[in-house]
Length: 323
Image (cartoon, rainbow, N blue to C red; front, side):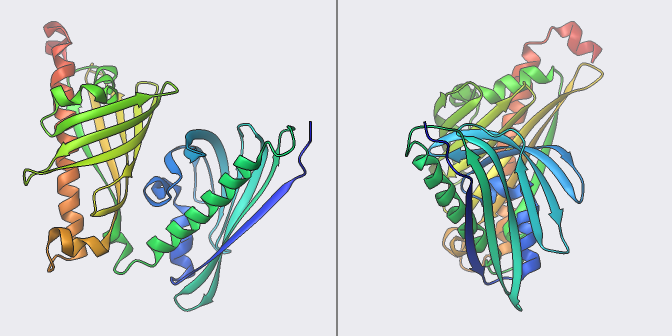
């Protein structure tokens, strides 16, 4: 068995955007699943202006891996340092940093650094992981540049919204409806066909054909993380032309009166180049944002309303009357 030496990797990218804007995209990890290709889901454990801890799920060599990270945000230095608290094999320790340096007005450079150690193993056994670190670093820097360099206001192309429905049933019942997406074609009018694979438990790959308002349909594919009957996060990896990125979170909370509250949060990254082709040549980014918000919101509200109806039917009438 060979004990690998400590590894350090550095990846750089010059971006045609102000350093402060680039730093803001790095610092706000909640938007990563919609921005960065490898990121699937992220859930904060603790968060302040200068420090945060979160659990992140990301694609590594074709499978969803998860770990817990601690980050320190230094806005004055335009630097974010990170440390994995619970590394997964073959990693035994991992630290690193994002550093943004202004080069000129409207131009900056980003360095993504990783410092890590790996468990002992046969010579060459970790080549796949080293390749994944290199590939994911390049993809993340490419995605960061793509978003930062988009024309128009960042708020018009990258945005988050939430829809909420109150349900006369326990949160666990609503969670079950959303988690069992393989039953959606029989339960939801806008879902035509679903293929669902779950391996390991709680990690789902979902392919879905959805009807659109003009009578056509489109196919999307997503990875989903299902946790503790209260939270389902997803990331679309096959997207409609109008979107560069789309992630979201379904969350469910019991109330004191026996009812529950269900939330559907979307984070969306528009594809500005497709706006004219898809929505018409005179459509502005703000109008496209509103259109996407209406379409996605309508589908998620329909899902929550049908989940509410389905869950309520499973609650005895005496329990409903008390709530």
